[in-house]
Image (tube, rainbow, N blue to C red; front, side, top):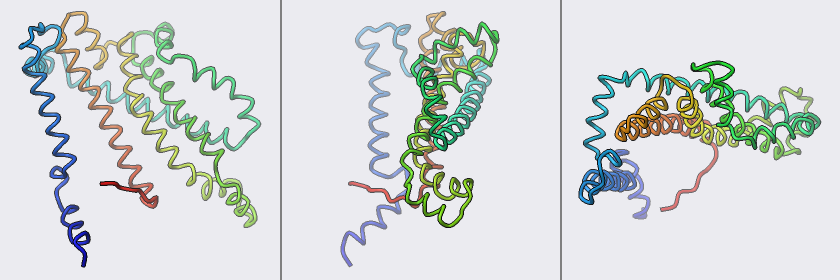
Length: 270
């Protein structure tokens, strides 16, 4: 038995946190945190410009006690997931419908392109004028931002479905719905999941924009409030928490993709 065959199980048997790439990543994080903590005061940067890590931890405790931090995190997380789910569903459905009808794709493509090019964040003030200072504008901005990556990915995948497989399914007298379920949907699933992963990162941006422009709850609201109070530690904390929400959503989708596409071989390089 070769040494490679013997070494492989030993490496794979290590706990996840003991893998070399994880250890190196944690070491880099530790170095960054140490630099962040000690460098700004050493070079005379005021703490209201760049707060230290200890300042941010202290501010996080104050935010928990005074600023209803948990409720604001929950609001942002809820509307991130809700906007992502609605926007992804609408984008996938529209992508599949247009992929099934080249006629309607040609009819609607100019309008879809115009909406895709238009800056989505510019709609936030308009939604506030229509619906007021509540959760609806940030939900709509999130849906709008999430919608197009999913739509584009699905539509592009539908155009590359193997036509020979579709014709073979027709030869076996499969219905249109059966062809979609057995041939087209499985073929486009990798692109759909890739679009969902892209949209998961954009969903956080959509919610944040809505909260910055006209929200009264959420982490985006805390960023605006902290900026108005010249409280850089609050702003940094809110940004980090927003990033963690995005990472959590992305990680769930990456986990789902790994389970759903387990049959696709992947290459690993050392």
